[in-house]
Amino acid sequence: MANERATGRDVILAIGENMHQSLEPLVTKVLAPSIFQVYLNGDDFDHLRTIFGELETEAKKLLDTEMQRLNRSAEPALGRILKPLRKKNGAAAETAPRYVSAEGRWTIRFSEDPNGVLAPGDIQVISEFSQGPSETYGAGSLTRRISTTRRFGKTSAEREAVGPQEGFARILYEDDGGKRTFLMTKDEIVIGREAPDVWVDLRLDTSLDVSREHARIQRTPEGKFRIKDLSKLGTTVDRVPIPKSLDMVDGEAKDLDRWADLPDRARVGLAGIVYLDFEKTQRP
Image (tube, rainbow, N blue to C red; front, side):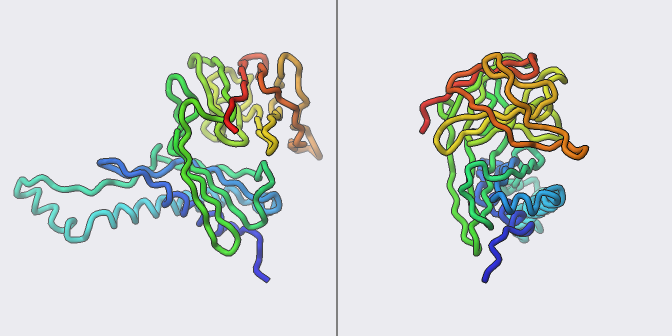
């Protein structure tokens, strides 16, 4: 019987495959997505969680190698030989578009499937080009590639365009950078203070009182929303504190997976410093 468990190698190759499917040609370059969110079945997530650091390192090496290979193959060997001659004769050198990461680096994050739809061995990768917010919107890239590698090597992929008026929910907030709007376009988001070593979807430029990973908001299969507090100084919903999900167990911080219901319209407070005005939108 075939082994249905996703291996580390499967995960790394799924990230590389998604990158190839997501390439966006421009005029002088071809952009590759820089952000990869990997979702795994709960059993696979528990099995691999202790080596996520190794998987991230190897996946980044694979992506770098693929960028180098694509750039070598973009310019035929004859063109590389003739380039010095063209330059000597004053002719304009024809250069092939360069393959580059949209942000010049790779960001990879691993999560357990929040909706429970992935079977053992399934790997879903959602990629985005960048997470840099504009002056108004904090949702990052408006185009995502979603690929799901199924057991026995079958892969399905789709491209999802997310316009500025779409999303499951809208979050209005103001941090040290000014007033912003964030569109929730996936089933679970991480909210926290901006930090180079922690992935967050909604990045806040604010006081250290707000934790690097402060809270999570999740959309359930029924279309309802719930919120989890992962902070030190607490999270409120309409001024009422919600239960803390982090607790010390045997001397280590452990996520007890405690969620609180989040109304379709609510004011979420983070450490009493930043307030998020959450509103469910009409997207099904």
